Amino acid sequence: MHGSRIEMSNQRNDKGQARRYILRYLVDHPDAGDTLDGIVEWWLLHQKIRFETRTVSRAVTELVAQDLIVEQKGADGRIIYRSNRTAKKSQAMLTATRALSDDDDSN
Image (tube, rainbow, N blue to C red; front, top):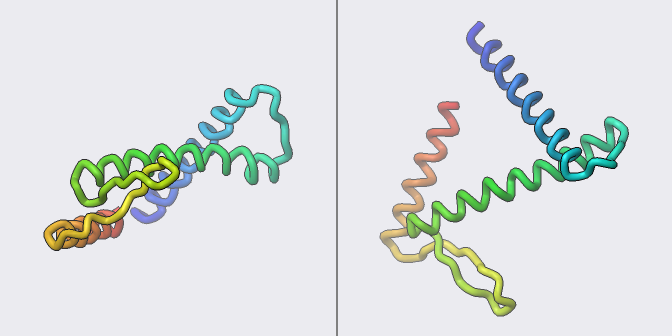
């Protein structure tokens, strides 16, 4: 019974997220119109990429602040992110990865 409650909660969250993505797309593109397949393929994908970009940006900022990854300016001026290869930081990265994995397993 407990598992089905979690599944129903996840479905509500997924539906709510899909609704937000659709409405956000329409705010950004008020003249848009498409089939259900088009909404899934284009609108939701577009919004999911925007969402993921923001999420990844925040995660990268935190990892840089924790000194687990470092920034380097590329030849074209864009920032390249790499692991901090000092032994101490490599161990910290391994520990952080395990902790995140444990968090994922508990959800």
